[in-house]
Length: 225
Image 1 (cartoon, one colour):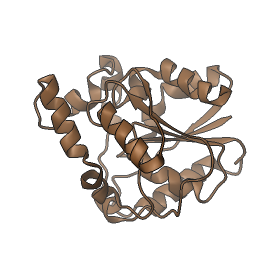
Image 2 (cartoon, helix red, strand yellow; image 1 turned 90 degrees about the vertical axis):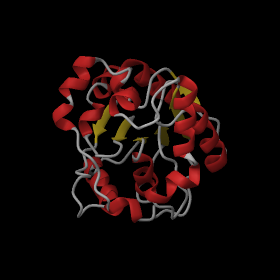
Image 3 (cartoon, one colour; image 1 turned 180 degrees about the vertical axis):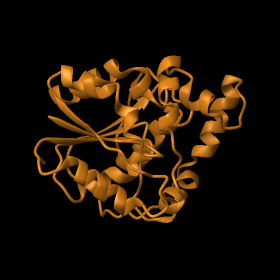
Image 4 (tube, one colour; image 1 turned 90 degrees about the horizontal axis):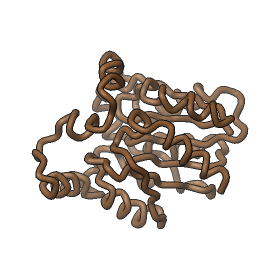
């Protein structure tokens, strides 16, 4: 099986660098998509084009994995190429035609994060270390400092252009320790938007960096099922 790994906001393919060898050790191939999401000339349609270009001509047995904001790219790609399976990993789950900018209020993510932070006794202002890197090994986080880039404003006002989710297995996989998209928030969104129960594994928002072997096992288990 060939895993197509679509990164979250910023589009750094580096995010997947610990997961790719784990998938290969399990007999699969993987392509880590890199998207210059800091380029204001690029938006959701271009993200889809770049992902398709990364896939290339070999389009058999594809599994799309979308991390965080990559959840907006995945259904647009799936509308253009046949896929065997979709995995939404700590992902934004869009409705057809929804924009990333509208998603936050529509799903109630800001309120869910604030409530989780208050319940845990954390500060309520967003902090990259607190909300993204809290369970990522220090050496891994340090090695990725030069890879970080923020997304431009361009995609946030663009609709996610797909008519419906494809009729293939779709799995919502949530990190139990995700502080940005709290697990109960992800469970609710999965039920409301996909009619699915989210699966939960240990790890925070950046689980491909913090627990790559466990994530590879979980992805492989979906194929076995």
